[in-house]
Amino acid sequence: MLSLSHVDLSIQRIPILRDVSLEIETGTTVGLIGRNGAGKTTVMRAIMGILPINAGEVRVEHQDLHNRPSHHRAPLGIGYLPEDRRLVPHFTVEDNILVSLWATGNQDRARLRWVYELMPEIGRFATRKAMTLYGGQQKLVALARALVAGSNLLLLDEPFEGVAPALAQRLMEVISDLRSEHLSVLISESDYTHSERVVDKVYAIERGRISLMTAPDATPTPS
Image (cartoon, rainbow, N blue to C red; front, side):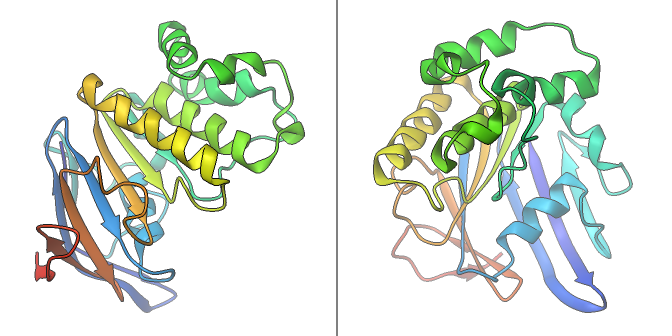
């Protein structure tokens, strides 16, 4: 489904990612574990085309995304939950969720109905402005937006960061339920606190280099 091969990325000539390679098979959930500043968000933004790579390949279903602009991801069924949510404050919850469909010209609201069934609490404040929600609720809305676009692949950047334990548990329940949908999912976290039970494979990232881990307590091996 997704593969990164020997990706290098620099920002203002400072190397951030170094020879990064990873693979996510169709229908699997993969963890990307690393401390703050290790490069997790940069990996996500490289996949999304927000940050251009200097070398290597980013491929989804064998399609090279290297030179494609960021807005070409949604038509490929890729959904993205950024760490900082990035909701439009004066849009309603539902309008924020529908942004990705508007971007692709898709008028089919079946995916929206499915999201409301998956997370009924979202439907209860669908008409409220995003700016009126507290942080945890905004995270749920950002996840809903990613789900509407992500019919094939979901990129979840620190989905549990800064939310109350009860809401983090709810987010984990939703992500766990996605396994039955055969979606491919990449989750970044600083540790295994939440995702350990659902990931099929784990990569560790440190100083922009990625290693494959066979188990949460295993020693990393270069990928």
